[in-house]
Length: 143
Image 1: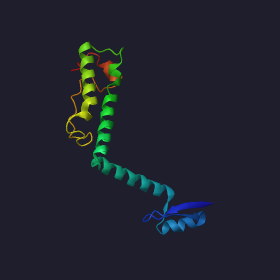
Image 2: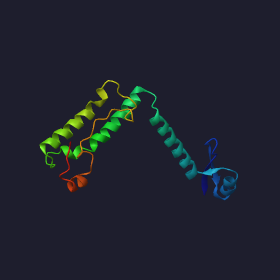
Image 3: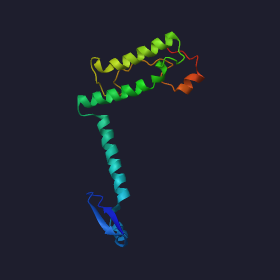
Image 4: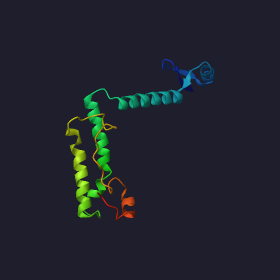
């Protein structure tokens, strides 16, 4: 039986007989599982760095739209025709959702790609909660 081992400095992989693997591990080689963990950690760090400072305006727009879409998703159930909202609450939710959709077209967009510098519209009080929470607080105001 064989074992894949990796040089942690170079990432160079090699195949060893199982009986030789323990000696190679003692010499500083690492297992395939350990190498994959290192790769995943490096990829996560690179993604976090990119998210913190995207390189291009197109990347910031993509981040802005992703954050905007996530905010829209938190209110999807509120616009269902049979969801129990007053007319005033429904108008507030629809206005909020439209403001979110209009955000990428505003002057200054994409700002920081949906981060702290993004001028997010104020969310209605009844928006962004789960349907279960909304049922528990059915009399909660929406504006």
